[in-house]
Image (cartoon, rainbow, N blue to C red; front, side, top):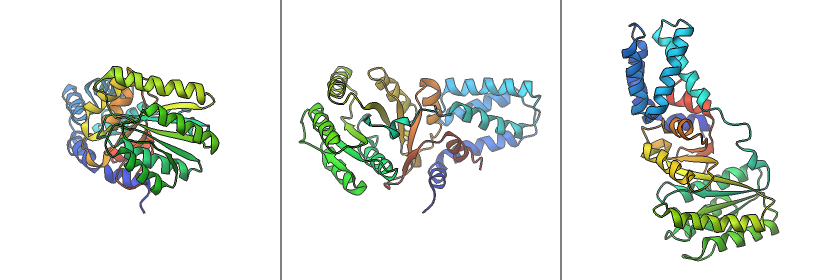
Amino acid sequence: MAGFFERLKRGLTKSRSNILENMDELFGESAPINDDFYEELEEILVMADVGFPTASAIIEEMQERVESEKILDRARCKTVLIELIKAKLQMPQDAYFFINRKSVILVIGVNGVGKTTSVGKLSALLKNRGKKVVLAAADTFRAGAIEQLKEWSNRAGVDIIAGNEGQDPASIVYDAVAASKARNADILLCDTAGRLHNKKNLMNELHKIHTILDKEYSESHLETLIVVDATTGQNALQQVKEFSEVTDVSGVILTKMDGTAKGGIAIAIWSELGIPVKFIGVGESIEDLDMFKGDEYVDALLDAK
């Protein structure tokens, strides 16, 4: 089986083609590095859903580099661009420390983004790293979510605590905490209801879950990951922004990278909101989710390797 970088590179084919078709022509010209060059490059980045604020910041930094290093060759500018984007995607040193301590991971996001699927894949990833994982099927509102997560728990070979459709999600989390303690689990991974149309309901639901965790599992670290669909482009960024306004989002799981021409959205989310993409999904298989590595992502996106 191909390594994750190769699968990531294959998954980013649409995005890479979309960007490089225009970028290679731009960098390949022998014309001067002038305002027209910068404007065209900014447009290419925006079209790849890097976002206007981030694209503008990158162009400004590039202009400074070109001036200070007296760069005259457009081809050299591609190297500078890669370096600048990689610098924006440097993972904080403590980004994954929750994996190596007793933790609760709350997974949030709207319906249809691949949330429950991502929970299943993440449980497999964590188990393969030697962690004892318990799943909590706390998305009790979406029809079929509980059965779907049960299927993923079977595939991943991890325990699951589930109730009935329509049951109070907080009660599922309560039972899952008790089970995690009894089984000495390393990580409790909770699938939550996927909705945002009513922020008050969402806040109330998360508040109840947080209260239970504070009271019953205070020794655990709480990690909140939001799942967004890369194919939705700027809408994905907006979802992260809106969810982060009602709860403390510590990271992003970016799904469906294999089906989008908008691969630059990872750069936009990180740069504009300061919330790192921690996991990335590039396919339907259980192994098609992995930790996000900024350098690999940029190399795959811009064909740098």
